[in-house]
Each structure stands twice: as structure tokens, then as C-alpha cells.
Length: 106
Length: 106
DNA sequence: TATATTTGCAACCGATTGGTTTCGTAAATA
DNA sequence: TATTTACGAAACCAATCGGTTGCAAATATA
Image (tube, rainbow over all chains, first blue to last red):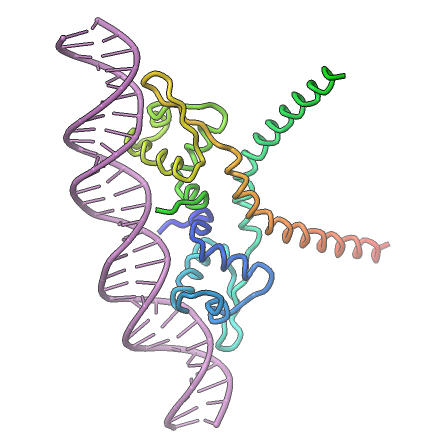
């Protein structure tokens, strides 16, 4: 069962969970309250998120607080980075074309 | 069969295809040459990428050239953006802590 | 101590996945 | 015209997915 961040964020429920716990740690029950699905289903998603190290657990009595390991999200950002370069370059090129047109108008 | 960009980039082969055709349009056969898998398998991946509008086709004789619709990648970038704010803020806070320590040392 | 709450885990289910093989079509080439 | 090449689509397969139900363990409360 080889997991990675990209597989983790592929599921919309998982993306919602990530967004939920990004700022504040939450218990599985509290997280599940935000969805139509069952607690067990959320628990399964949390296990997957834990497996790919996107999430951190903190036991507190009988409750377990889950929070986001935001550093892991940088992996996605890094991958997207290579394409950001491309679309920024293309924007620059378009910019050059536009300014050339302006010059010609003058 | 509702597809989105996040599902598209979940598969490693698909991510590799995306990176391959990001700069230059390529035919399915040319793409398949870069992988261990068959042409038909790559063809299936290309269909999925087409379905979620990540890819553009251009017929040229009996060949079909596939290229990346880089604008679509911005959707992922946008989603990651909300977390970038968080980790940059945390970095700022760490920075403040560090400069406070420096001041105290002085 | 008996009961209720919070949780993870295993078993199971139908749907979907990524891959293969096979086939049909259209374009290039002999 | 006959053959080869490039490709998509369909049928099929084992593996995995997301979800459910049921249960056991640990902690809190009566």
C-alpha cells in the first residue's frame, strides 16, 4: 500500500478534511460532524492521511486530536512549481508582445 | 464519470506524461516510448487527461499531437495557495522569534 | 463497579482503477 | 490496390477504493 501526497489529495472528502484541520487540531468525531458520511469513514481517511504523513495525532485522554503537517503540502507546491515557471514565462512573452504592440501604436 | 485535476495528477504515470508534454506536443507512441507500459495504456491515460481538460489534441495526418493545457494546472496551484499562506505566516512568526532572540543577545 | 463515550480495526460490499488483449478505422506507403 | 502504421474504443481482469456494519479497547462518568 504505497501512498503519496498526490493520492491523498485526490479525494474531495480528504481535501476538505485537510482544509478543516489546517489551522486547528480536531477530533475524528468533530471532523465527521462536517460531513454527510460516517465517523468510521472519516477515520479511514485519517488513517490514509496518517500513512502518507500529512497528518499528526495527539492523544488527549480518550480523544485524539488530528492536525495538518503543513510541510508535507510543500511537496505538491514543489511539483506545481515547475509548471508555474512555464506559465509565468508565457505570461512574460505575452507581455512583451503587448508592449511591442503599444510601441508600434505610438 | 466526473473527473477533476486532482484525480488526474494522482497517478504517477499521468504526472510523468504531464511533465513530458508540458513544453512540447507529443504523439501517444512517442509518449509511450518513455514508459514500460503499452501504448494502449498511455492512450487511456490521455483520455482521462482529456476528460478533465488538462490536455489538448491536434490531429496532423494520422498522428495526434497532445499538449498540456497549462492554465488548468493553476487550479491545483490555487488550492495549494491557501496553505502557502499558512506556512509563510508560520515562517514569519519563527522569523520574529529568532530576531527577538538576537535582540536579547545584544 | 457498571455504563457511556471516543476511537481504531477488521470484514465485507459494490464501484472504480490501471492494465492487457483484441478489434476497427483512417492515413501513409509499397 | 494491398500493406503498414497510428490511433481510439471495447471487453475483460485483478487490485484497490470509499463506504458500511460490527466489534474490541481505553478512558470518562454514574
